[in-house]
Length: 310
Image 1 (tube, helix red, strand yellow):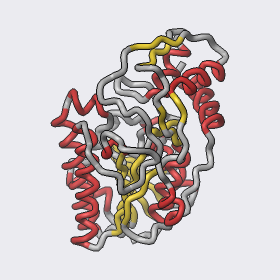
Image 2 (cartoon, one colour; image 1 turned 135 degrees about the vertical axis):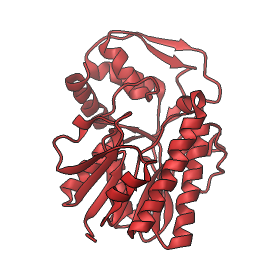
Image 3 (cartoon, one colour; image 1 turned 90 degrees about the vertical axis):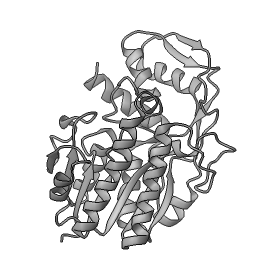
């Protein structure tokens, strides 16, 4: 079994493709499993990876992909609050059954380390910020519930079978390869509307805050979790800083060099008012330090969006 052979589920997706690129750059032999439901083969076409097209719930596919692999980065998921509300059964099947399949085949193959992509959605309504890992976990959407259940399953496998498992709770990730879709995050939504010369819609007064972390830093967090983690654990992945949605909209318009009107709509129910990660545990135990500030990250993203999506 190669110490430098890694499997990335969901590796053709937005975050997964950035993780795959980093592991290739670090000299790893990289395998990718993706059913291309939200991923794009062109995200990894320039990378030296072995690609398996299929679903993570397919045990025979996962068995083949896990063979002689030392590290599994499990990123494949059905993502998003609204998507899970629209189709809670699919959310549960992909996020819990898919995770269990990935864990079972990893265990059978003798994989040493599994890094699981979780989400700040597990917390639900927030009591305070910054949010430590020990904040109450009261997920208020099927997506949050399924990601939390996935965490529990991953940690269960660590206890039962001696797998080193690391759960990374992502906050608001943005960056290269993030495309607009019907359930997209706010930055690609704003980008699409700016370049389409349409007004931006902000729900509520726009003073709600979010912790936006660049995908390059998320990729590094996965690399550190796989190679530098002292053992099984759970970590927040954010920046420790937050900005308002008003600021985000205004800066994206200014950076684009285009003109877009900002319109306001009623606040959406259950939207979190303020969100900011406490990342001191990841800094202390993983050596994780975000290196891409919001301004540079937004500028690079808008350049990428203009070249690839307009």
